Length: 432
Image (cartoon, rainbow, N blue to C red):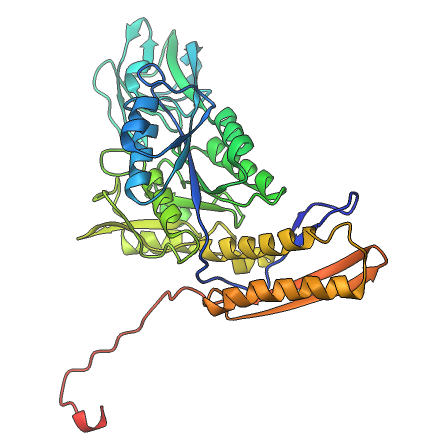
């Protein structure tokens, strides 16, 4: 969609950001990352909904205990992110939720994501306590033993050994991402370039999307990063829940131990900034995925603009670098990969910050020429570094108090495919 930032009601610069065959290459600019997730606030010293700039792994574990958030921060640091602006979600206890009305062995709790520590979950059915184990797959695919239950904490789904006949209750703790994301955006929106969440939960994804787009409305641009789903039973039937160039969804998003890979992912993005595409970049310290996809499954998700991870003999790497732009979204089509979105935002900031300096000056041809010269110099610098391959700048008068700045950029897409042809036979070296 066309993105409008600001308005003409008050003095200032207002921007319409459009997609029109202007894509991205590499720009030298710092990239700062944020992470939001579950922490052990009993063992750690941090407080919920408070931003901490973490620079070492020991600091992460001191603040957040031995928790998913601490592990993700350590992964982000290992992959080159620095510092990691981190926020622990508030954990909210629920006691005695009624699950007797399901009439089935499959139950979905009212709140999610739950704490990944399944020892914090108690389930009682027909007066009998259940032994609880966790899965990051579909609990309905499991066959719990007698007096047992399997829980996917990300989506709050439970599979029981037997359906409740007279009574059923659940005690659990869930993470409130809303307050944590608000705290991060309020405190660090001016510096963040990437924001990752550890729970691949639909409500959390939507909350992140709302936060990221809200930041963009005040020229605070970032990419939101989340897992695409807790599990995808059939990639050919899956649909991307978003249609925006400001979000990237990743799958698979956990390693074989069930640990989130989002920390490692945002660490890589922070280290490369907007110097290069994430395509084919490796996640240091990661050697396995919770699920290894077939070539067909990867292709299914690639078409849906899901960032696909894969393993090879050297570990885990990114296959592609798309944003969540739908195929029929022509207004954002040219921001359909992460690097394009970042460069578009970078140029937007160049234009906004320089144009803003002229608000309040006398509206003369000389002032318009001066602004045009400044923007030409800025974009020439990008041209010399191959960040863009062409650009145009035009500054013109609309009326006595309004000027228009139009900037066009042309950049190079990341190289996606190479066709290699190897011919065996006689070689004519004279013509080589």
